[in-house]
Image (cartoon, rainbow, N blue to C red; front, side, top):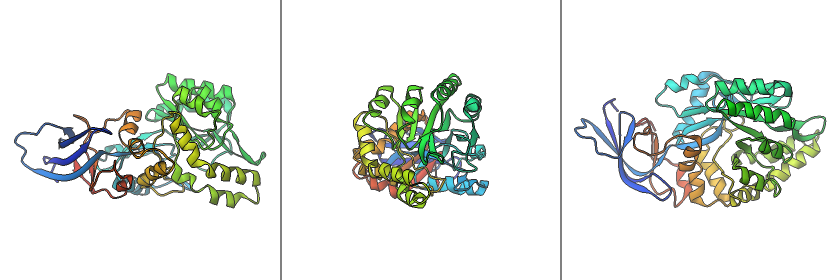
Length: 363
């Protein structure tokens, strides 16, 4: 496709959950709903078009052992792209992936900097491992390095206790979140268990990842404060295997992980019913492969979220939450085209007909 070619997308352009247009064009990498005059070359693509999907929790440049080479990070991004995920919120990575911003064939990445964890309380080679008196300084550092987000590790296994426990005292997270907000960044935290949630939410956190520890006591607090969750159900599916691996050494932790797993769908549905914002994220890039965005949407539907709302959690609603445009006049020409209406059956997301980045058909 030459640089001056115009892309014409026709069929049903899903500009919102209930709003569709008949066609759009992409000229110079930007969307327009006005037919361009005098285009020399036009390529036409037909089908049901969505804005590029959002994976709001993944890790580009990271695998189970730590940072990876640039060519591996490129393959991760390409896998997400070919699955239709064209906007990635990188929820913590030790790799510098800024070079991806110069590539017009890769997804757009919103970075949260590197994870910030308590000393010896997270996966080796992933995080800044620090003590509470260093938290404000490191949050400030990562707020300046990231793209408007900072990622904390809110709880992890405490080997002395033999179970999940909070990583930070209340006063430390209050000061750290205030510093991030002062610098214009939002804060999110990895949380599996119950006990860390109240302090983080009352300290002003913006989002919780996984959120398997939500209960009837904390769900109303999340709803009242408007704190979003990204459940990563495709990752929570690994809890039974993790529990089995730790059973001999940490039986309390193993039992806890199984309980969190067993009630995972009820937890997500209860959060949704209470009005908590829920968004799609896969946790790809640690132990999970990339390209799982369609599977996560299907999991939200299995949990009881209405299909149209689960679709919005990776499309229109997710883009609004992250401050990125969808299929609007002048927006970047990042979209995915399907053979049938994904609103009728979200399983359609697993088979994109065409993936378009910056107006160019790339897959």
